[in-house]
Length: 260
Image (cartoon, rainbow, N blue to C red; front, top):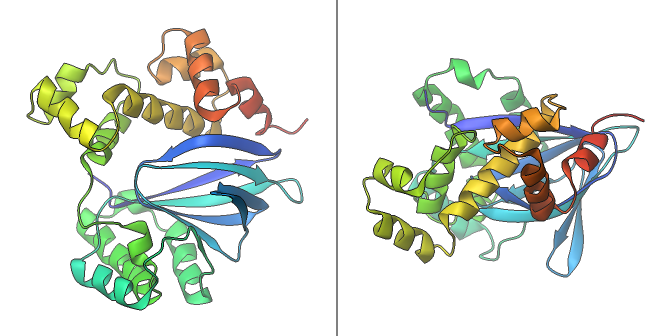
């Protein structure tokens, strides 16, 4: 069953400085302990439990997660269905047209987010998930923030491709086969991605690297195993791609998850 929302828990016990982390779906990050320093334009924006990070689909983030009292932790809420047009229009009417990633959420919104962390979403039908999710969307619309996450009413093509690849990041995805899945010729598929200023190999690498981070967060520690689960036969090639993407190698990232 396709989910309308996913809630992920991310942690670290040492500073995690990462660049170019792609957020494929509209998302919201809520720090629980420690601080997140987002490198945004010409300044740094600091996030803790009192404010929320809003991100749009296919947005790339560079940041540093900073533990306090031994731990950094945050929830990531990823949204896979768009809100009704009426909610977006309400949000646009109330809020600023200029996107800002930081949002000082009121307690009523934080209470909803806390509730969302306790729900077993995978056990609910998509229709039930949608009803819960639209309640949060309405809250964000009334705050004038919903349109800062959803920039349009439909998923972009690259977002659809990324979500398809994310189901099986370990597979040997070939462009021609993926194009067939979307009922397109190779040339048409490439042209659609080019319109959104990206390429198939870029999306595939981003999906695989995000999956690598997720595996490490879930307790995987052997680099060869992680590489295979991300579609890389060579752990050396995997390590090179990881460092190219995030600015540190897998061993360095793994050290941020384990106390000395």
